[in-house]
Image (cartoon, rainbow, N blue to C red):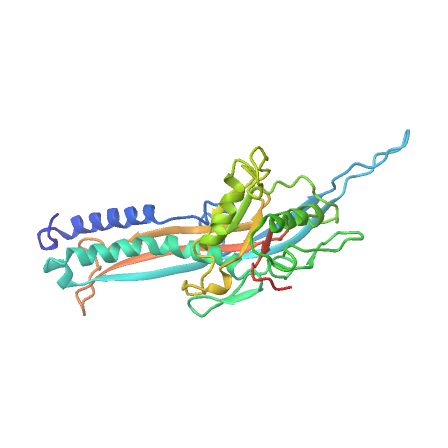
Length: 339
C-alpha cells in the first residue's frame, strides 16, 4: 500500500472517494430497506418541504333501485402532514502530518468512519420515528426539537387516533392494551387490532389490509421468540409433532438495531422490548431524499487547503426528511406490561 508522502493530491482524493464509497456501501440500511417507510427522491428546485396526505374511498357499493340514478361514490381526504428537509453535515480534516508522515492508517480510519455517518444518520432518524413513537416530539442528538406526530397531531402509537370522515366510529387504537412482550397470545392480540381497529377515513373496517412485517429491536430474547414463531415447522407451543404452525411464513421479521437507543444513539434499555407489526404496502411513513449522503473531496490546485493549518477539508453532506401521515398501518407494544 502506497505511503501518503509518495502520492499526489489528485491521486489521494481519488483514493479517498473510493474509500468513502466502499464504507458507505458496507453501512447497513436496515430501516431504509425494511418496507417500514416509502422513499421519495426530491429533485432540485422543489423547495425544502413536501406535503403528504391520505385519501380513502368507500369499501362498499350502494343500493340502486330500478331506474334510479347511481349514487356517487364518496372519497374522503384524510389528514395531511408536511415533510421538512434537514441538511446534515460534518467536515473531516486531513492534516499535513497525516499526508507526509506515513499516517495512512489514520487517514483511512477517518474516511472509512466518515463513509458510514450519512447512512447511519438516516437510519437513526428513521428508526427513532418508532423509538419515540409514543410521543409527538423528541429532542435529537443536536438538541433540536423534532416533531414526529402524525397528520392528526397525535403520536404514531396511540389509543385513540382520529378519523376525518367517520360516521359512528371516530377513533382507533394501534397500541396494544397492557403492552405485553412477544408471545403467541400477544401476537394474536396484535392481530385482533388488525381485525377490529383498522379503518379507512369513513370508519369502515379494512379487513384486507395486508400486514406482512413483525418489527422489533435486537434484544436476543425478543428476536429468538419471534424466530421460533415464524420458523418452527410445527406449533412452537405444541407438545407433539404434526401440529401446524400458522405463523410460518406469515410475516417478515425486521430487526431494527437502533430501536432501543437514546436520541444520541446510546443504548436505552427502557425500549428493549418494543415490537410491533406493520403493512409495508400501506405504510404512510415517507423518507424524502433531497441529497444522498456523499463526500465532497478537496480539488487539486483549488482553494482546498486551509492556509492557517494546512489541513485538507473533506466535506460530508446529506439532506433528507421523514414524515408520517397516519398510523393505521402499524401496531405496537412497548413490552413493559404497562396498562
